Length: 340
Image 1 (cartoon, one colour):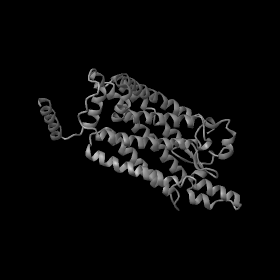
Image 2: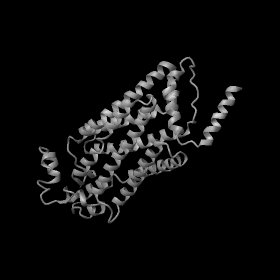
Image 3: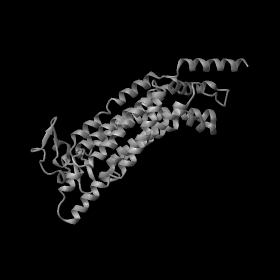
Image 4: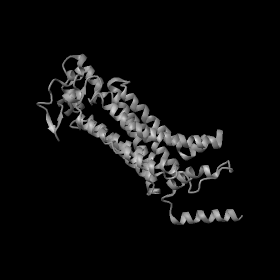
């Protein structure tokens, strides 16, 4: 770890000098002894002084109250996602919601096991969070990319750029798994990743966020130029606001972690972003699932071509899995209406 943490005296004081030499290794990854403890084992090894014991209790159980709340949010999202996938199994965004929320439900189980006797260790806990956050980022990225691709008339360069920018995302798992994980008296279970890791993650996330933000801002500008004050009502119906909120949440949380706004607790912003984006993604999928196959005509009939990419994107994303008979019925109704 000298090459990763060289010059960080505070970190060396926490981990110990040359701790890797006698450390147990898994896949050539040194495992810190304090990371192989769960909460109960950590509490059992507390010093005899009341002050130190109080610090350990505070640090170990500070994260416990959040687990039931987070679990509830993910379970609720998972149930909604199951219903959406069952209704429209060909909708890609629905499957992304399902995968992401299922990972969150498992996170709740893992979190409770971390506080149980003979439960999982701190290392397992952090490794799972790191893997789930990366999986969530990929699911959100795929959904955003699909949306941007459709509203920009199936732009090939946008699709190619988005795929290329999503490829480096698994680097987050590498840094989380190769960084020492330990239990600390003040905070509890933490990953001591390299000081430059948040900036690397910012460099990975920022380009694709800029790409998606630019794509959505262009759509917003076109809508505003066409509809004026009615633009936001149309954007809500098409889910563009939700997509922009997901991108904004990711940028804010990554910047907060990179700048260490909350000190060692700043890494919890990764989890916060995971929760926020999961809720927003499910909301977007629900809205898209409720949109009929034919989008209503724009209020300004003088410029219907401006709405073509947006309405086509909504119709394509929402009706991929519509049964054949329902599509035929909708087409017949539309024909009768026009004849009348």
